[in-house]
Figure: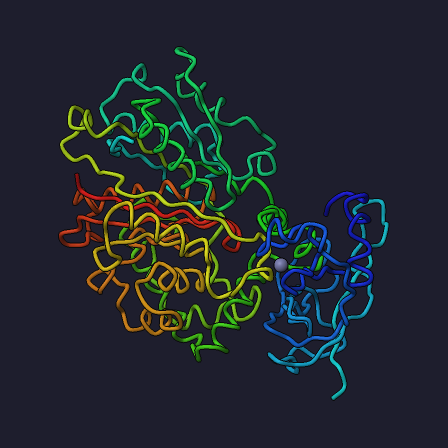
Length: 135
Length: 388
Ligand SMILES: [Zn+2]
């Protein structure tokens, strides 16, 4: 899925959950954008780098049974939309938990994991997944 | 801008058409529409083709010129344009064709939609569908198109207390309608238990909550209203046309249970037509997944947010209900050859407004609506069609 340069280009955000905060309105965006979709011109030069805390809660989830060929080995796996404590939502997998134990509102934290391998080259991709936070 | 009418319609059967190529089904639908309009090939000023991904499904790009060529339209070297907006490619082709006639640039325009999906395997299809999503921030993390719709379904159940039993009313109705449509892929009624017990794709979505992979094509012929009556006694006027966009990634939206693109496109189309949503008698909605039809009912305004599942399960969207939805069988049961779908929706509404829908005819239908969506709602297109 996609070329190697395309994947590496996104590395800072995928490794460190780096987003941006609009200094004009205070909204947080992930992945980073150059212009605030709310403030437009007013936001130019005011989009500041922001490392997300990695903490959030499950907004919705599903158990994926029919996967892309590159995720065949993992299936079934839990995919979730996580609402980060900073207010933005992120889509990724949830690991280290049984599917029946996942619920909307469950507290999770980001961890670095292997996302997949690049076709025949076998180069590994890493990025964030989420795991439950012990409450 | 001039008033524009649909003066001819044509479509192929939808399904796994293993013995037919893309060019063959495209031409079959196009010729049927041209014959229905009673025009000669020489009168055609331009061709638009809605197609999502011929490059990946059959390794053939440049398909508008290809179809113009094999339909015998190259003699006059007419412009042939391919249009792409993922699942909304068909409706976008219709809208571009509509604008070209309304503007006065062309008089007679043929608009086709075609997709040949079943030459590749199911896993390849899953990957190609995913290209309509955000590859960098959804697919890379393991998201598939059905998995995103599954998360909408689960959140909807959580917020509004809807049940899977209520959701079954969508595919059950659409299969019942398709049983009365000779062009449909699945011409058999199903029971709610069939939906509930089906193999899971991404829970709570099972096999029967997902539109199938299909081959097929559909076409319409447009003309300015002032000359439409020269060709047909039953022109159907395009009274409103609305298109809108939203963020490509589902998680970037203001609310994952409202397709704002649908809200804006519907509002614009209804306003242009001078109609209220309550005036619509028959609608083809984008039921690529069960939840999609529920959200569309709400986002267009047939029912308030959160009440769609209840509305559907009480029979209000059946033929004879408050608003007849997906009389063709919809994407679920009529089939979903992606680029053809938006055109097939218009073909069905024209049949209804002409009174030619046979066993599935909605009595006295004079005003209809089509709604076509790309990806998880990053593009939505709504048309209002009326008896001229
Ligand atoms: Zn801002």
